[in-house]
Image (cartoon, rainbow, N blue to C red; front, side, top):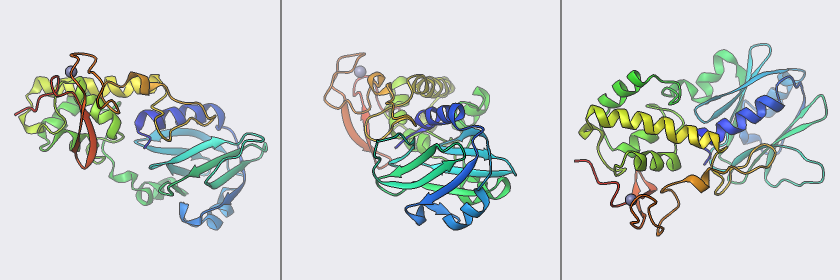
Length: 273
Ligand SMILES: [Zn+2]
């Protein structure tokens, strides 16, 4: 599933390529992808211009004129890609056609992705964005430390809680835990203030590195031009079960934490008690 760095990569590409374009037409290949239904969206979106593209957590937000928004969540397997001549894209659920004849495709093998359209005022509510916690790369160190200092529970579960801090998913949660040298099932209430500060720094470091390398392309993530991210080459634990830890040479293990496959180094990452 694309996480904050992967979505940020897409948003940066779209900001460079989609801003200024005017919607001309839209085709739905799967009506359940849309809220409200595609017929209603088409009536309102024709002739509307894209003013900006921004990211909120893992949501892609097209800021349109007339105070409208088009919001996309890729979920597990969603992709936004510019249509290329002669290149066939499978599992297309939506096609946005612009007045300069370019087309942006939304494809989604597993059909969990979603597209919302509405006014600026309504869209936060209907998309669920209003329930999100702060952005990890925007929150101050002070506020982060206060937030996590007061939070109880398993470290990895807390990193994945979108209402606590928004945008972190399974891959980056494991990398963050490895960077602070702590087992993902450690409990936050056992952390002292030094460790909470280290957690803040690890969140910043891991997400910024991911963005710098244009995200992780291990299964489904590709950029809007079909380019792959490079960050999978830099991962320290995620997906490395059976390989040696770069720090200590121990064999990376896989377990389940927060109901998710979780990778860690048994030597570098003891459980904090
Ligand atoms: Zn190690």
